View (cartoon, rainbow, N blue to C red):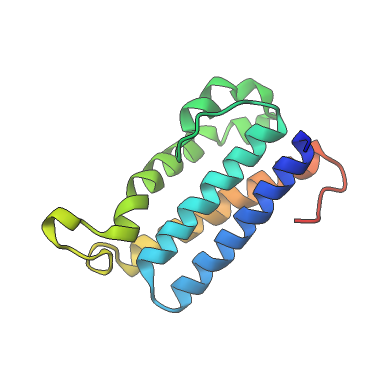
Length: 146
């Protein structure tokens, strides 16, 4: 499998996660909204890294790698990397609690995250997904099958 195919597959998965995040928000399932938004952000950012043949750590947050390879991206994208890093770090911290809650305190996820938290996560995921989609389309012409 080549770089283009990997990036395409990641974006396809990111699109699915974004859709599931929106569906969860409509269902007022705010922890799942946040969890799927984080997965969308993760897969979108990994797609652009994979698309530029950058090896990234096998972690949920790839913001440090984005910062290191910032020069590989066009100005319009690299200028947004600090914002994308902040979002990725924030959502990565919420990933576990959005699924499990705070087990040691016996606090379920539904008691931790509000509608505002979910709305912010969803908007952030959309921002990153859209930017990564644009970048992938620029990198690989006619790259619209995801």
